[in-house]
Length: 274
Picture 1 (spheres, helix red, strand yellow):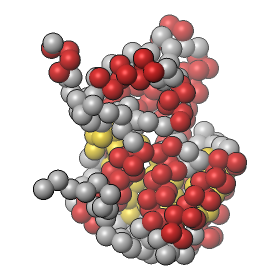
Picture 2 (tube, rainbow, N blue to C red):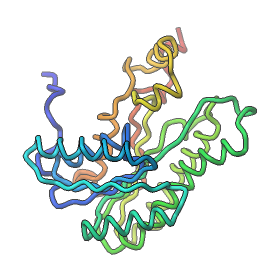
Picture 3 (cartoon, rainbow, N blue to C red):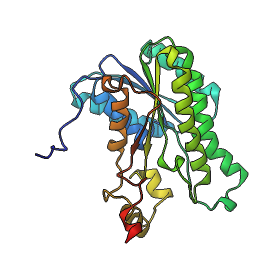
Picture 4 (cartoon, one colour):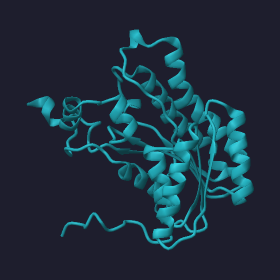
């Protein structure tokens, strides 16, 4: 019998009493990850560069929690992951509100399509600064606190283009490759502090930002979908639920793991052989 996709995999209240901090929480995967944690009882703190987007996320998170009969709390604060002082201010405000944080999700990203020869040094630095340096700034800011929280968890939002060549996205591929290496390195170094460090690696995902920057017309989108063995784009729910799994008790002996969430796109598509 096939599973009913409307049924939730995770037990109600799974994350009750858990506090979660998420970068890039104003849209896309970050926003939906916050929604999913809140639906399962967690309180969440979101940062991002745009206050209006964060306020929209907060309203949606609060509504999702209320619909689930929960009174979980959502805090939002503007912070640019390229600026460590802003991350420190967000961390301090979060800890003042929550007392502690158990889960950190490094989700902030940046990307655009361009041939490598056309990417300016500033454009390359901006993407690397957000994707890789921003991730480092985030985990470095939170490590002192998480090291005092046994069984805490960090999840990196990487991507499958960190595994392979990344044509037209040299900056993104380099940054995501660095995130994957950082995931494994910190999993080893920070295991003594009982911090688990894992990553989710999506392939093409249907988000407002990606739709505008990466496959903005119907033909481009159709070509991407044809290259995915399961025949569709990923959704923000696919990615968010992968994060939930890695933070759940079911993954308590997993660290340094990269959970590929791409419908088989990373594998050689059948169309390449026909």
